[in-house]
Amino acid sequence: MGRDVKKDFKLIIDNDELENMPVADTSIKDELQRWPLFGLSVGSFLQVIAMEQQTCIMEVYLSANHWGHFCFVEGELYDAVYGDLNGEIAAMEMISWENVRLNIKQILNTSSVVRKIDKNLMLLMMESSRRRDEVQENGHHADGEDVDDIEEMEVIADDVERAKLSACLNMMSKDMGDALMAASISNVNEGKVMASFHASPETAEAFLRLTKYMKNAFSANTANNLGDHYILDLKDRQTLVVLIIGEHQWCIVFKNDKCTLGLLRNVVMPKVIRTFNEMNIG
Amino acid sequence: MNIQKLNVCMDILKKDLGEGFVASCIITTEDGQVLVATDKANIAEATLLNDATAFMRNALKTYPAELGQYYYIDVAGNMAVLVIPFGDYQWTITVNKKLVKLGLLLNVVLPAIINAFEDAVVS
Image (tube, each protein chain N blue to C red):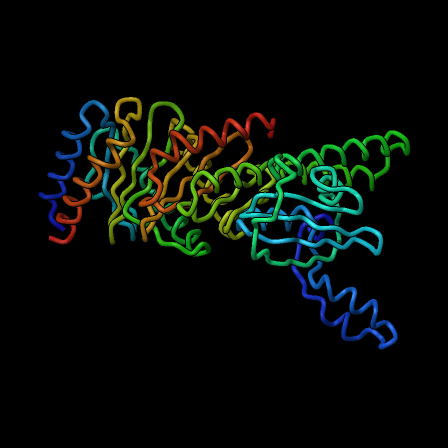
């Protein structure tokens, strides 16, 4: 249950806390007003900005001495600054921050923005997760086995897997452009949604139940089992493709007048699946 | 519903799919009763797919979207099933996917049989 709560990120505009603050604390109040958003991890918000292809500066505040910013141009991470650090090193430091306060500023003129980060955001996030794993593992060996540690490790492993799957969806979104309407990746065995793009968890869960129903129906009533995909023609020129790859189920809804089923099956999906397999998921 | 035209639908289907045709049946969605079926048709499967269609319609409400003209299910081995729900009826077609390419099935065969099916149902 506690784990579920951790995953339930909510974007909160923290006005109450500021309004109830004593007048004497106005300097702190002013300071906090600079970062009106909280309740998300840095990684989650970075993915939102990348997916929405925003051009902005995302300011991040962890504490009085730990704050910095990320610079995005059309969803691509161009730079990051944290104290004396900048570029990739600064980004790696800040990506793993949680319970931060955030502020977004629009960039009106990108001509002066110098690109200092060439690495894909998802690769940076995966690298950051890997480093966190290493730190946790070292701590684990030093402290001995502990239930809290094991739970924390599971949460981190889950986060790494989610980041990898989000990277796959991000790649798909870039390849398909506005043809991609929604997508989700769920763990079939655990029945949970691991990554999504414009898809509600209810839809992903409903299709997990449908797959389970069809698997049972086919194995109980026919000589053959359900295969690895099914395709639904939808109204408004949309198509839904459900792919079952190992223990994951992918649901992809796309505009079939902008991307053909053949293009999805023969070009987009092989590339995404190759990336998916290279990440050693499942 | 024109039974003669329904049989014509089956003939068109067999002709278009050739060796790739395996079996087919048309059922009523309300009670799952079979109207027309060819040899080797798996009636239990067709009836279960009737329930699956209802399941899909409900699942799509959460998106929200509506089921279009057909759905296609890959089956382990050589088979695949194409389902065409239309009003009070549902047509289930089993094909040998090794012999019928998906593009041919969806872009050539399907439009022809959907037209014939609609004509048979509304007659």
